[in-house]
Length: 98
Image 1 (cartoon, one colour):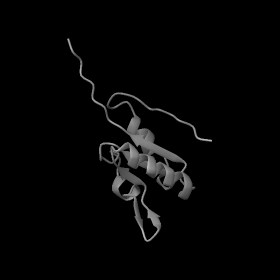
Image 2: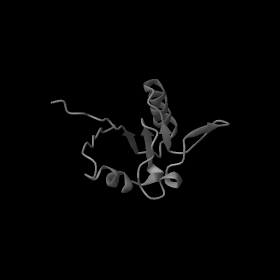
Image 3: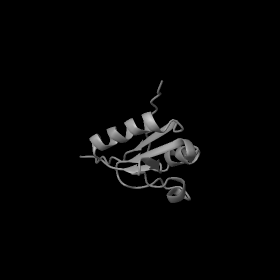
Image 4: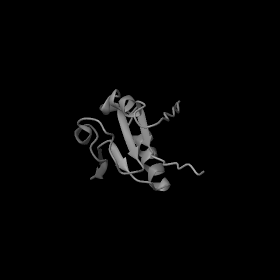
């Protein structure tokens, strides 16, 4: 059974620290902005997801396309049982109007 946890907060509130404390071997990050998390060694800890010759590698996928994200989530669910944490990193900018 999956559990959904949303972490929402302003810049500097500790969202990236939460990711930093997860085990990269068990974590998959989907970025809707194309940016890796701002943690030391992110490129090495979270290499780009790829499918080659039927083999899966990597644990970082960048796309804002809902259909592509859905397909990757299905792959993770069916073919990557070692992944226990899936992060969908989404930055939204809100502006105030006066």
